Image (cartoon, rainbow, N blue to C red; front, side, top):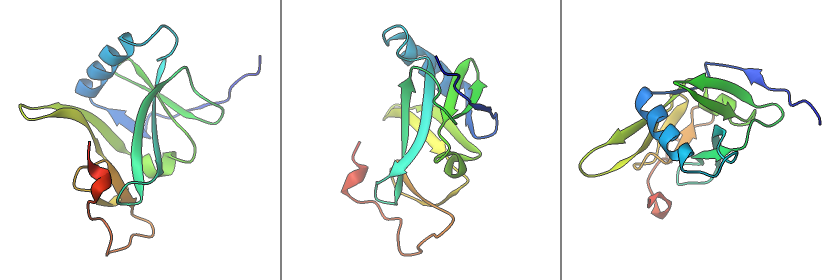
Length: 136
């Protein structure tokens, strides 16, 4: 079996204690071995250009940045890392709704629902509205 090379990095994505507790609770509901790490990524799409992707994975992949926050192993792929540097994942629960919120210092504009963003580099001042892709 090949060795997977990862980079330890505590600075890419930070989890709040509230987010970590919710993530651990959700991981415990998954089949054994299927949710060993939280994968945080960005992908093209959404009404502002990029959207966030949070999901569980069996482990880190080659080249991933890896950190631990409040007992949760977090991995970020090399493409996503520059867009997520310094981002904070929180879990909020109010009377009206509950869900994860990502505070990203690299976002120049965000969709009203917070599910997509436009990175600071190459920001288009005319973009950033919220279209139909913001429905939860």
